[in-house]
Image (cartoon, rainbow, N blue to C red):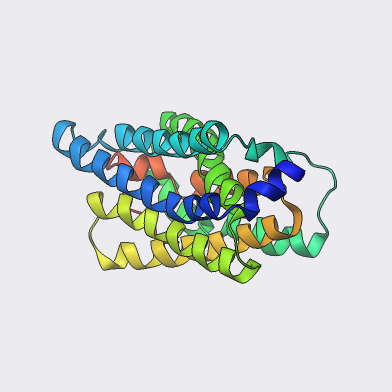
Length: 226
């Protein structure tokens, strides 16, 4: 814990944590600009997401090997201690079921095989996003309110950065940004309380399944509203 304390109190590393979303978003944007012009629109999201994950890995490697701090080692990844029921419902279950209406109305248009793809995507995407937006950034300088607003705002913007390249309708973008902002607030509130990344990951997996992301990006169905 002394290593973590010295890391979080170091102004240079504080600045890196604050600026790291810019690095992630800029690299992601550059990747999207390239991939949407190289690949078919129905599959261009795949390399775009891989570029997104690669940018997250770069941030982690800088923290781990430049600042020599195994930051993720200071996170819990366990069902124990189990959170109190109020915290569990309010910050884990509620965001998980926000896309339920989209799933109910749109899932009938998705071929059965795509549910396997959706599950695979959810099991990959959720850990990457949570380990960055609620894991690494859980150690941002400042108070809990700042961390909540800062991470939720940029997390929502990151979805605008992706979805806007495939779907430009405000009818789609507004509920997407609003819902991901709410999810980001709730998940980070949980992290401020518990520093246990497992529960936000599970919640996020359900979100990615229920919003039918793969079917949406592949153009099989209209983007679901949240």
